[in-house]
Image (tube, rainbow, N blue to C red; front, side, top):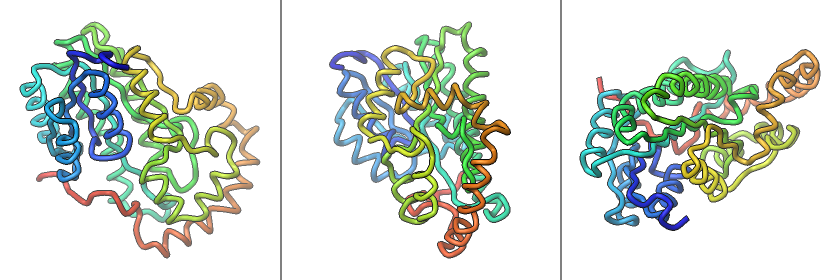
Length: 293
């Protein structure tokens, strides 16, 4: 992918670790430059040092619209342009609807939907100038709900719908928009969820492909970068996630409900007990930074 992104600039949210950091590295390897936006300033600084002059970083919480705008505008001023945006910042939570506290649920929705909105809103003027491309990271969860992940499912379904509406709104500006649907990726979120909640791991093993598999960060990054290069409307990770999109109606139909109900009746009580024993609703690597007042 050498020189694929020569002369181009990408802005990546959630860039400190995992998929975001991987895409940043791959984009620079492809000849581009990258604006790293996120929390965890020490990790952002370390990644920027690794990537050299091709990277710069800005600390911003996607729950804070003013902070996002400041970071985006500063990145555009620093590099002179923004051609690609990866709206990647996102978190998950543990617990059923009756169990999770309001703050934890609302935090997931605020980051995974409103954070995407703020990212798209403030990068739009810059993407319009370059006739750029924005890729919103949704999920397999956009199509397939799973007990205990209601906030994540709702937020990722919302992120998909947001991206589809935004795509129509900016078409006349020459901006292309894509949606990325990863299944379970070998990141901190998935590893910690399986460590914290044995019942979560058990449920995953009972689900059909691709929900019962885990994709490496490297493979996920490669597919996202290919999506960037081709300005794809959908990026499925792995490609089998496309099947979940096509069979969404069947998965959520009365035909499938007896199977889902049987699995849920066996696993949900244990999941709730595990979350109660854990004493928290997020995995241990979720930063606790709060947005400015």
